[in-house]
Image 1 (spheres, rainbow, N blue to C red):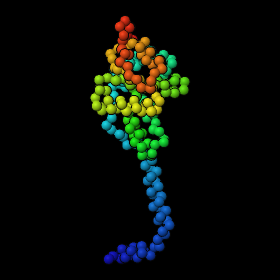
Image 2: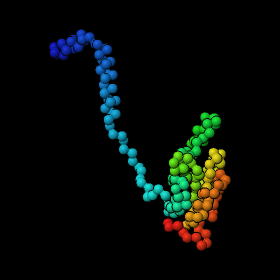
Image 3: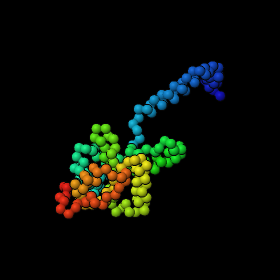
Image 4: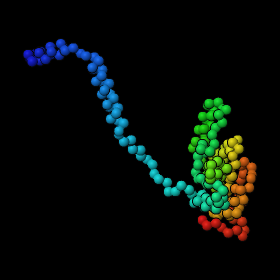
Length: 197
């Protein structure tokens, strides 16, 4: 062993270790590392694409007629989550309440009619095309009918068509009706002028 290494080793062994200083340095380094991480930009999320449009062509056609039919009486909102309109009853057991919430979280209503001043919900509208006759879609519709009825919310189901009568849609919306109802008579009646699509 060389003399310089022996002196160095001997010197190192004789230095007292100040443990509070060592602990303070380690804690400071950890805090500094955490603070550096806070300023970093969030990790980029990949794998999403913009949809072509919010509404389908059938929904756009109905939306235009619906806006004319309700005029200033109601504000019309589209694609609103069921969980933003309905909430599970708090009297349920916690497990049942969570299951009820999970069931409606990924569902939406096609259209929601609200009071323009207070946003109080007047009714919800589902536009049903041929896909609603499928087993899974049919079960979803039955569930929504039951959920709306239990909440005392008016659910109006309208059969999707290529054109609609403003007068017929107005009649369906404005006339007090049952909590859940289905309408196949919203399309053009003989002699009606179609609303522009």
